[in-house]
Length: 143
Image (cartoon, rainbow, N blue to C red; front, top):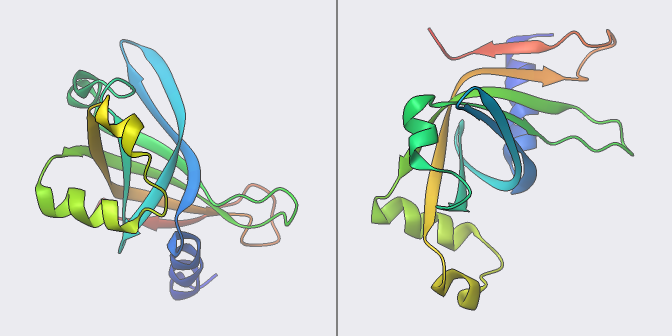
């Protein structure tokens, strides 16, 4: 498939906020969690509680693996993304992400410290995009 078509399909998956799986590794153990992702171009963002992602986890290994966009009923294309992860605390980014969210549980937020995670792609695999099973279309951002 042409790279431009792959890019367009990935952009469509990124268009709306989506729940996906974010996986990290810390202390030689894998950790996975469901989060809602928002995008700004190719970068993805999510807001999580400071308790759910220890900043030491990100400092020790800043790579995350994300699965996003799969719809079992539609057998749709989805994205697997290897990304460099940053903990973002700057107010403009926090405000932007807050504005993207539809639902705000103010009471829950008052009792928790929230952090923004930014995922900068190193590689994006578009899965189920062609007729060959388990043969991804790859966008490489490492170069």
